[in-house]
Length: 120
Image 1 (tube, rainbow, N blue to C red):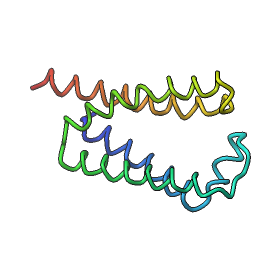
Image 2 (cartoon, rainbow, N blue to C red):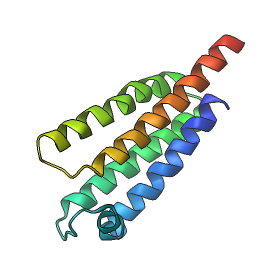
Image 3 (cartoon, one colour):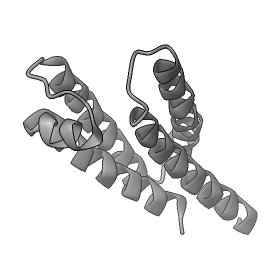
């Protein structure tokens, strides 16, 4: 798998997540055990996720490996924060699932970058 392909997969995931958070956030929240909400903040988060999806898609299209490296570090930190939120009683444990999705994506991109570097 190329680094661009791993970033494209990540962008598609973010695109789907962002659209759901903007359009029908409770369709995602409730099945994962979170309280339904009418607060605008979850939709604001959805917009931010859509922006990240755009950046990731552009990085995939242009094979911007510097950006890809940056995302590996950032995505690997997400579960650390989410675990902290759960330990502090700020979120339900199901949030950690989303953190590990980020971590899995980071590992996939990291491996693709290493493979590409070794092949060059």
